[in-house]
Image (tube, rainbow, N blue to C red; front, side, top):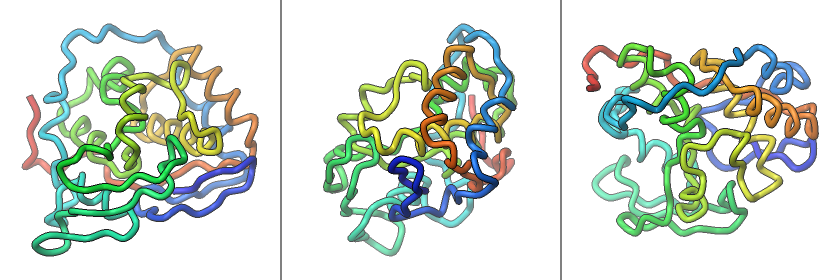
Length: 224
């Protein structure tokens, strides 16, 4: 994952889910490849439609939440092996720019779905099979450790309604949303597309992240 100041990319701790790649301006160019439609009704949405939370879809014997904590935190400490993260430091938190200390059970760090699951539901995921929804919910490309209090203000907002308060991270954040929506064939609203292009025009060299997991989860996983 990269953090962006202006148009210069800087490495941030932990990047196993999304490797920056592509030609100059790939993120901005990719916006035009997204289908534009209206937001569908939220009817029928529930978290359970995307499977059990933090399923081990990559079969590494660690749940997805701990995988992302290991990737994104510094000074990580474990309990009972190398999966259960009990301590770490989010420095900086990409959404607020502040330093946040993670201690298991204190709920100061969230694992955010960059493209919120409810937003995905209203823009195509409602029509998928459960395997693809489970994959989206656990794909490292769509996940990031962030300050919980800042994240709670996001809800299921898209780029048109919410971006991180930390301005230096906005290009990276929007590029990640574009990457996820492109990978999973999710559509955007016209207002969302305009907001994406406005932000990415300010950083035309921003690359499009790639990587993460396959777009279908193993068949052993189920969702309602």
